[in-house]
Image (cartoon, rainbow, N blue to C red; front, side):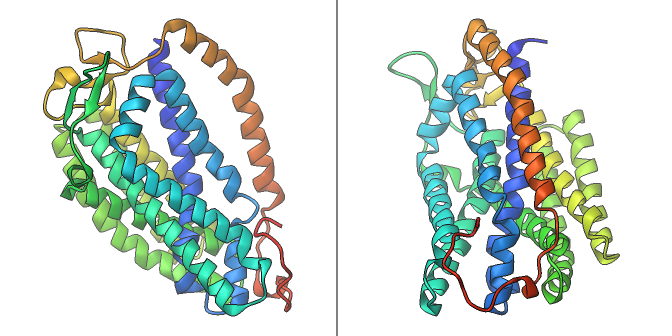
Length: 353
């Protein structure tokens, strides 16, 4: 197997890790106005993700860094052509993270309410725009030759990206993350909020299942029913329905695993369709950016063999360390949290305290 193929698969795994883990963070943030009926319940929601949200974002940083090093042409075209939506995602993530850290700094209702709004908006925006971005990447975007050298550039604007297919992808990721967040809260909390979260997960899961079927069928039509993706998407649908069934049966652990696998398989299916391209051109296949070094098929987006070899050794050494540390973090903070764990007085502290 070529190193370019290995790094394409590794980048896919990094995005799977990001969406499956950060996805429930987004879901919890979006559900603050729905499930947080009291100040203590809202603090329970914040504290449920407090120890892990920043670690979950490491997957995004690693995915971006790996893309830059392994496929610099892909990175350059993606981050220049998708500049505005990616900027909105970055700003939303910053605002959301500030809300986590600053909400508890002042014992004032208006102060907390404003930071709650920041956390809600900062969760909704990336939950939608990540779906829009990846739908466009998989479907392909108009490209033009780079007048300043090797590669190709995005030939469009923001409205090019806001097409019906991409918007449906955004609705799907929002629904999946919201359901995933509700499943996480049902697993991580106790008391009334646990039961409300589980009931909401069932309702949002059923609505998301309808959107998921529509998006997956549309995607497979675009991909001429590619066999690998068809199988992956079929299993994805089964996982989502299984998660909903487990939530109905009050098996929160299995329900959360179900939405975790649903998101992971959905991302895997999209990368299956994408390969061997990394940035397909919808107007001219010869302008597509490819993972392979074959000049007869599109434009190679990959780094040199030497660079990929060095990166591979670095990944082999450090990836297990990161996985062990993050697994340990989840194990340490595995217990449920309820309103009786929250003190009556709001002590100024960050969400991660």
